[in-house]
Amino acid sequence: MKKFILGLTIGITLTASTAVFASNTIQAYLFPTSFYINNHPVKLDNDYEVLNYNGHAYVPIRFVAEKLGGYVDYRQEQELNRIHINYFAANKEFLTDKTYPEIHVGIVDMGHSYGYTAIQGLVSIDSDIGSANKHDLQFNLNFYDEKNKLLGTFLWDSKEKPLDNKEIRYFTDGFLGDGTKYSKVELKVNSFK
Image 1 (tube, helix red, strand yellow):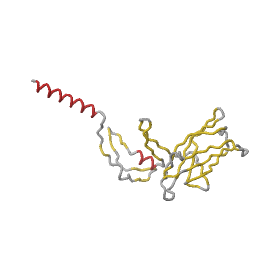
Image 2 (image 1 turned 60 degrees about the horizontal axis):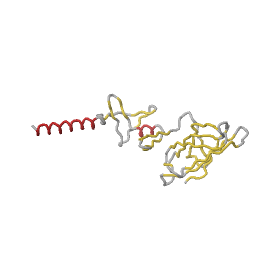
Image 3 (image 1 turned 45 degrees about the vertical axis):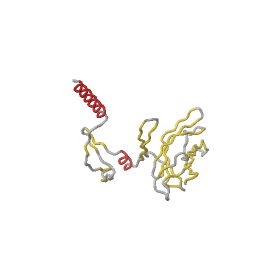
Image 4 (image 1 turned 30 degrees about the vertical axis):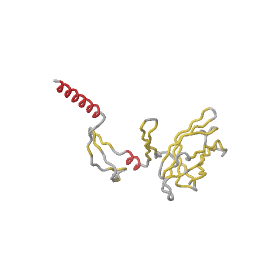
């Protein structure tokens, strides 16, 4: 009888632990499909698969975002798993420096408070340049009023984390002064290695 109770206890424990473990898993099926972006066929890279789970197609986010012109970055921040997708919106203009036409900066948002202008934007290197995969970049955004008077200068530097080729990076920072009433903004690349 003791062997029976011991066996029953072990069986219940294994069954319960299997159920707990299984609650974090799903059963999905490979879903062969074709991709068309703006009515043009796009071949799915060999590294990727599309899954069907409960009648919904789950697609590889990096494949889709990059085919739409975005850049995907996976980071684990403060024990949170985050996927960042950065892209230049089609309806927003971006700035270039004539000396470095492959570098683009787009202003996403600006605000002014207590003599300080906060700025959020995107910076990218749009092509493979030289043999390096990572680049140090420093640039200024100079904001001018309608009389061409300098309202303020925003300085950005990638020295803490160099930019990858074809990366689109989100940045946020600011400068002293009120740049929100600008009529012209100029991108000046100070250094690019």
